[in-house]
Structures are given as C-alpha cells and as structure tokens.
Length: 363
Image 1: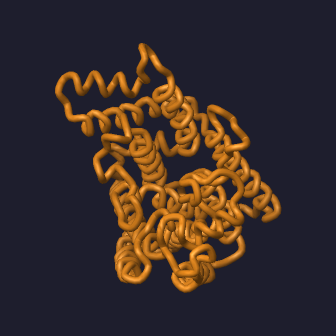
Image 2 (image 1 turned 120 degrees about the horizontal axis):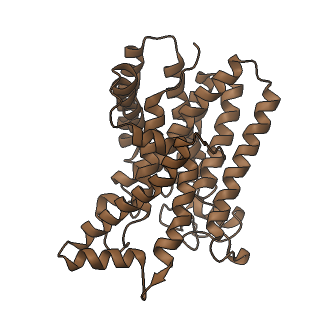
Image 3 (image 1 turned 60 degrees about the vertical axis):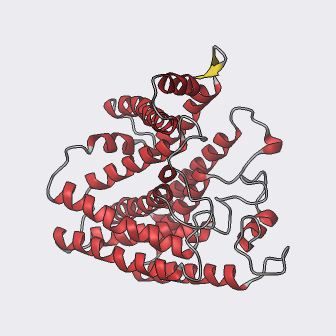
C-alpha cells in the first residue's frame, strides 16, 4: 500500500517534544510536582513515558519514510549513505549540546538523549531496509530476553554479585569500560551503551506499529490492532517487572514493554480521532512542533542558557519569574510549572516561524 502522511503521527511527535521541553525546564528543580519528574530509580512516572514515546515515533516514521523510498525504487546504497549522514549529524549535535557553554573537551560527555536517538534511528533504519516485520519482532524479543538474562545472571565484576543498584550493575560497569568521556551520574549514565540495546527495541516496536498502518487492512481495523496490541505488551511488562523491575535509567525489558505497549494505543487513539474521524482541531500546535522536532529540542537547550544563565539584577530570568509569582501568593511548585509552560510557549515561536516559512530542518 502506498504510504500516506499521517497527521496524527506528526501531531503526536510534536506534543511529545513539547512534553519533553516541559519536564526538562521547570522554574526550579527544587519545586517540581512528582509526576513531572523521572522516577528516582525503580518505578514509573508520567515523565518516564516521554522519551520512549519519541523513540517509538522514530520507529513509526522510519516505516513510513523508507517504505515510500523502497516503492519509489531508491537504491539502497544511496539510502544507507543518507541514514549514516543523518545519524552522525544528530549524534554530533547531541555532543555539541553537552559541550556548551564552556566547551571543555577534557570534561566532555559523549552519551546523551540525541546520541541515543541517533543510534536507534541508525540501527532501526538499516534493520527496516533488510528484514521483514517477523524478523524485526524476533530480534526485539531476543534483545529483551538477552538483556534481562545478562543483567540478572552475570555478576557485576567490581562487586562480584548480580546487582541492579545505581552505578553498581552490569550496564554501568560496561559503560565505565567502553564509554569515553564524562558520565551523567559520575560512574554511570542513563543513556549509556548497554542500555541502548533495549532502547533500540522501543524503536522496533514503533516500526511494527508502522507495518500495521502501512498494511492493506481498513482504517478501523488498523486502529483496533494498535489499541489491542498495547494491552498484552503492558501486561507482559508488568509481569516481567516482578523479576526485572521497571527502570528507565537501565531501560529494563519490563520498562521497554510497558512504555512501548502504552505507545500503541496512544498512536491508535490519535489515528482514529485525527485521521479516521477527521477531528483535527487542537492538533496544529503538535504539528508545528513536530515539523522541526529535533531542531526545537536543540533550540530549547540553547535558549535555556539565556533563561537560566543570564543574570539581570543579580537573578536569572527564571528566578525573576518565580519571585514575581511567589510574591502574589502562588505556590512555588505551581509557579515552577507555569514557568515551564511559558518556556514551551517561547520555543513555539521559532517553531511557528519555521513552519510558516515552510522551513523543515532535517538533521
């Protein structure tokens, strides 16, 4: 079936980026509502769904983009080159964001959010071009089982015991051995090398959702499949969590299934409402953010240097905002959330200008 553009996918991508900015830039980290924070270790909050949702959307987008190219007869060698180039650009931009503003190369962090996105995109795109959905599903299952067995059966060399504690687990040990540069938490990194393997599975789950949407089934049946498939994945993830806890920092197999499983009905519901029923009211903000999603993410990081780092009258802009709101009697946590919403709105301005001028920056 000829791929068609999904408004629901564009909107979901944009709202996911907006949510990512919202939770990344509160007025102050000392005053944040618990659902807007990541779980400190084991467990799950609303915020923990955002990053997996984006990787899932990357997988869906790969299915649509490369199905179209394959049907148009694009040479695979040409597609490989573009995939490698795009992955490298996203990876290097992520490293650049870790360097600003000091550009201290002796304290450089190689791992990061964009870097993981780049790796997931690279692996999933190559996989999509060279395998069918069954092989992709088998590989996804094998990675999750293999990761689980490795993390729960192989003792951490520094400890001599199987451990799943912060900085004292197999993934952290592998990262200390193989990952160059600074790590986010000192002796471990939430975007480390070993935990990127199950993150790739999140992208594969997105590709499997893409296969459903690209199938010859009627639209309502596609929506039903997406809605129905999520439940068994979530239940399997919850069951798996009894022996391998849900943990975003380790991107455990249970975390992968619960968050990836939740993404299926989220996409299915959006697809049903927006693309089938045509209820597009309210999607424009998401579409505008989604049109330049990674660019907006980068801009938010750059703008944060101004809003959090530039001092005027002895205080940064975010603290001026909090002082003003607390001065009229509003709770600090509420003021911190309002500031985060305001920051999302500020980032919407360049996104809107790019969209109006039909400028779509593909890193």
